[in-house]
Length: 460
Image (cartoon, rainbow, N blue to C red; front, side):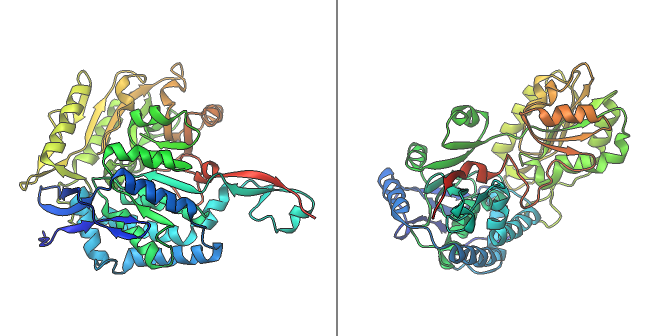
């Protein structure tokens, strides 16, 4: 493990440049070694920053798209604020516990998204709408796709660097953007925003506002639209708000019906559970089996048990690393919730200490006795899956509230029913992992559906 000799200053990036606050939060790696100091800005700083964003004009379309592409390249491969790409990836891995191969893949994904973000955003534009009132269609009357506001705010998570590729769409569409970073891993948005500024976005176009919890709500209050990540409590708080888009647990699932041989899909099932350390909302939380779920659970457990426990900076690492204290807290929660289930893996615990104050959370596989058991929707930030029986009598009720549902079946009537269910956000049919996503494909709907609206325009 490399030794970090100087604490990294993760400063606020405000409307007049870098700001180092008096109130700073110490950040450590997963073993408790000091890594960085995060500046926490006061409410007045937030107010001034949001006011500056509101007063600023968006960059011309071609200018901002060129700047986005160059910033993505700089972020992924260049030196930003004196930090090389390799050093950044290593520090993020140690800070968040995310395996370094996953960090690298996420960084490349952000770079690609930055280059094609506007074209991807266009997938959400209604077919009858145009982007500019100057287009010839407007002479006869047309719909124009316009922003719903001017300032977009993000309360970002720290579970995966890749989430920071999403809010770039708002910049591409002309919003000014404020990001409140996670305390767990603020380095990715800090580096990304610094790269955006170095490539042409003004300080009044995109800001980084680390805050205490009291000031966090002020960012949402002063933005026109916001996106907030968190648990079910966050979703429940903001779900009725027309100006806040909550991003919560995925509770993604796989359904295996009796007309398919599950053995042919075992690679996909295991990959859906463990991909990217099992921390994403698109990782599989539950596998429902028409018939006896025991052989499926046993096969999943055998595969997951073979994954090694390694430090996050190891190129072979697959599993996420936590501080020992955080790992034990998650383990206690799991064991309490799993009481009464049949454990195929992780029944005695999931914490595997690495000897330096950090620990890997080993995979867990528990079998339930019915499809509507409450555990089937418990989503934890490591490879933890609940395997349950499913029957036609149970219907689609146990499959509701799923960000992604992969269904291995030949029953087209069932597929029609699942596609029509509003609480199943994405339906993958056949041998497709729940984490599959491509540019231009909706995740939880298109973000553009939230950011934009159509306005009727006719001109002479």
